[in-house]
Image (cartoon, rainbow, N blue to C red; front, side):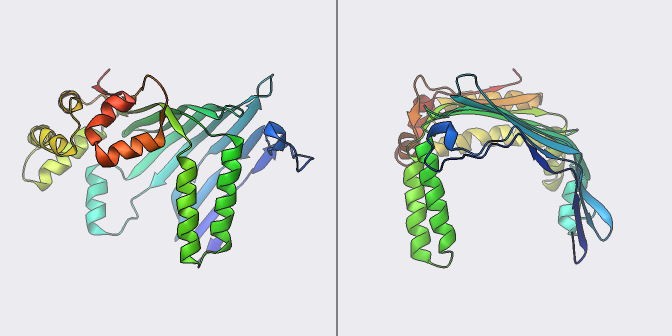
Length: 293
């Protein structure tokens, strides 16, 4: 497809092992459209004939457990490339060059499972890994994502699509959607960043803009963190975060944030704590912050 100066191409698109429900009154997994594999071959995007983005291949798979109660899923995207050398804005171009982001090369991965009857979703890995930048990985578990909730959310989405210009209808549907989300509970969550060079380049560039070097900029950040955390009212977690940030800045390897409550915590409780007593959140959801582990 070509539009003005941009050209987009993709090949080898297909779905395999597609299951279409034969009964519109079916319940549970039998009511879901299901596929074993979704695939995309090479994707290329060019502007003025110059490649700006490409992807080698993307694959997603789904499988059903023997007892037909759990759907497992995996997805990968390999050979993801972005060329930022064509950025014209002078300030953005300067930042891109200082951070060494003229070209990006990486992969994306995702894997997890969904217990349909209980509504428990376990995303074991959702990660983005770029060479010479770093790897950002996330995992989380939530409960309450039942088929009934999915259907209600789909109905609200259709309502919003049917009246895109009706502001009151959009607001009402949005509030209804928020109410549905409150049926969910957090089981656990983890966010981790493994550095591959971007932190040092970022400190060097930030320091340069402040008339300092990277090491001096690191010390400035270490001094600012306690002040910012005091405003956030994180209670006992403040010292833990400061210690982790200091260790990471001194030796940038990895930074990890974990939420591991003793029991699942309903989203309304988390939202209420965030608005009324943010200092209680670390204990409520069992937050831990570590560096270089």
